[in-house]
Image (cartoon, rainbow, N blue to C red; front, side, top):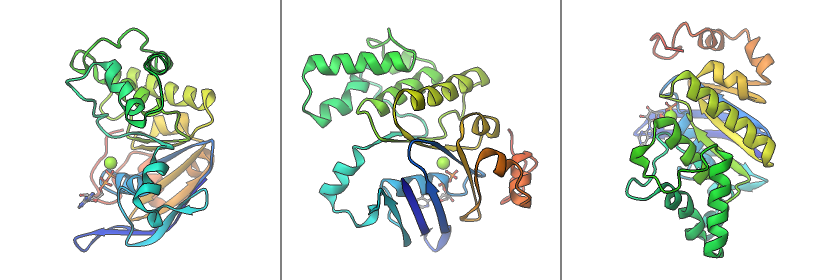
Length: 251
Ligand SMILES: Nc1ncnc2c1ncn2[C@@H]1O[C@H](COP(=O)(O)OP(=O)(O)O)[C@@H](O)[C@H]1O
Ligand SMILES: [Mg+2]
């Protein structure tokens, strides 16, 4: 379980997070939604201490992430799989080598064990025959799936997905959604998904939390959040406007 407690973060005097409180239950899919630029990626980075809070803390299974030393932190991060925006693959390496990379870096596995694990995770993301290909030969959706295979290669307890479907067509979005759900059934994983795709959010979430104005303005089951009477939440869910900039958002 992850507990985010009164998290504050500003950059150059500009507040991004100003008191985020959220509990992320183990073994479930929590989707964090909110308008572009509201601090979703910043929040996610605090979970693995890629950013340190100005105030407040993040507890993972009771341990304060911000208080960890560098050795402990390196150990701790191995429990996480991360699929960042853009799913940056190494372009000069084959798909196989991309997925094998964290396994080799982690150490302790024979070449044969690595080969088997890579084949298994590529099959799990529905791409069994592409190990020999280069990332440049793949579609955007396939690259995301390879990124996902790499993220799960070390059997993480927690997976962080930063906008896994942004920029994908509806078919590919659907495929990624199904994959996130399938992974949840296959492995005892805690998933934290950042999204600004409302339809996708309600397809996959056990819990939805909305970030706006630097705070969580609604959190709960998809049904509860859908029925929220909070104006900011309503307008966001209806896709009418971006509550922070008042721009129209495309859904
Ligand atoms: N490392 C950084 N240094 C300065 N400003 C940052 C940094 N990371 C994010 N920001 C700012 O924080 C705000 C929230 O960014 P982000 O979390 O990426 O938004 P989103 O909700 O779209 O993921 C933006 O205004 C962004 O410019
Ligand atoms: Mg982001």
